[in-house]
Length: 545
Image 1 (cartoon, helix red, strand yellow):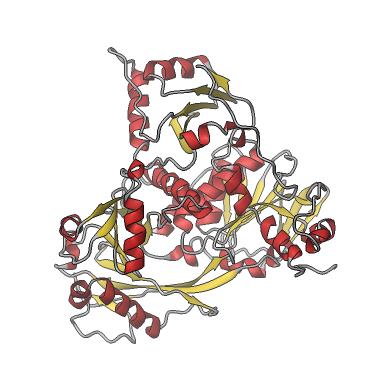
Image 2: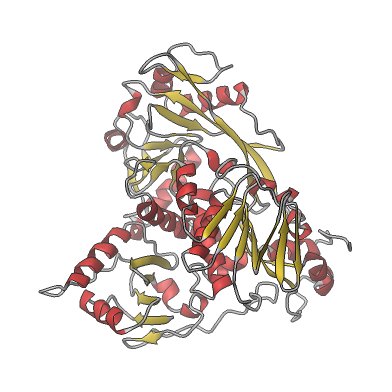
């Protein structure tokens, strides 16, 4: 594995020569001196490889961001381009496991950050096969991230792929971020571009996703203030920009009365289509309707028992979403989760609503019509573990849609359909019911996902017990990790943007690859953070077995 670095964007000829001269996989690291989209200059008579490079890079630049690293995978087979904004260019060691080979004068590097022992990664173990528990967006993306680097993967799913929170008919991909560079903002911006590039790669025909952007409407004073602060960040004008009500109407294709923040590369997508595309790989072995009943590490391998057989692997990754509290492994089920019920509903498109080109988002959302229907919602109900479709939630979604756009809602529901049954589509024959979708989302107490290596909770509680007396007590005891065990879950309602990039981070840790997430973000997402917080508060998560 080679890492070649430049302190400015090289020409396409330079890149082409480097690609020809070095074996694959090859990582090309370009450090940017300013928060600007880079330009890779072509030569007067570009070669075929230069032309292919130019087209590949150009197609991937639309969603780069300047808060953290941008990993543009496979600009050519086995060749990956990493664009590092000034904030990240001085911290390459956080991302690349081996030193880079500078092709220009080196960018001065900051010393490595001090990392608490419970955030230091475990010693890497040889990987022969991974077992992924769960086939939602997180599980499918994790399996794909491992398989694309040559590791065989067994996926065990208790029901069918994309059955629960990943089963919405239409979700939105954009990043509802803060104007401040919080960990969540960094994660959402990194993940938004990552997933957007995945869509172009895996589903190029756009049969299951599309639209002409996402309009996040200024529907109240708080959102207006947030969107105005974001609009002032002109270095991200290619990602989002403010638009007046008149411009928003032109973009949407229907009259709107509110100004908005416009995400031009934002899209609606059918999550099951993405999940199935991610799982479609020769090294991924999917076992649907095969719940994991027990997992045990024995003789250097993980043995996962199901009702009919035992599956073995060097690594295990839990991606169980709302089923995480029910995991057979105590070190997974004991972590703190918040389960939130959500329901989306469907409405048959009308001639008026069919003109909607952009997804609209405010307190709720509605997608452009796909296959004759709009998806809209969604409810957000805590302390409710029901996953059945409810007429009361459908009515709540209709009321939210009326607040979002009264004319559009009135047009969709003018036929007097009762909210005690799903909407219907009447085109091409007899009326056909359109059933909404309800499921539980899995979130964490601090609303950040749980991603990374799993510690042995009971042993951690003993090793770091003095933190209960003094949270600043200096402890250097290495973290007692479970061998080869990881997690990627608790993405809440943001999984389309966050789960795939977190999957890439998990794969990087397991396989010793460059990591797309900064050390700051890896610390913030580590499941061990919740264990340490519980220790400090004197709230043990696990008693001795």
